[in-house]
Image 1 (cartoon, rainbow, N blue to C red):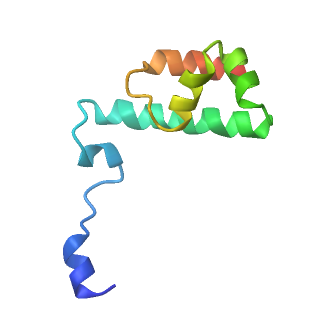
Image 2: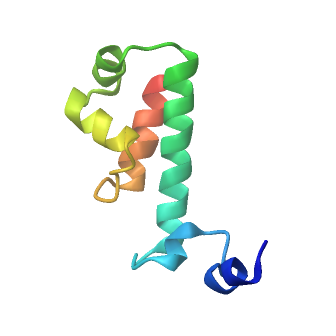
Amino acid sequence: MNAELENILEITSSNVYEGIEVNDTSEMQRKSQIVKDLIKIINAKQLAPEAAAQLLEVDLAHLLRIKRGQFREISETKLLEMMSKLN
C-alpha cells in the first residue's frame, strides 16, 4: 500500500457502525448479521421475493428495503421473528 493511501485509511474497529453516527452500534451489528442470515436463507431456499415477503408476512417493498440494508427502524425482535418464520 502506498504511503498516501495509508494516511487516508484508518482501521478503527471491526464494527462498521462505530465509524458512523449510530446510537447502539452493537445492536446494529447484531441486526445486520440477522439480515445477512435472512438473505442467505431466502437465497438458499430459492424463494422469489414475492414468496419470501408472503412467508415473512411483510409487504414486498418492505422486504426489498431490508435487503438493501435499510433496516435501522426495524427492531431486533421483529427481525428475529422474521428469521423464525423461515425455519
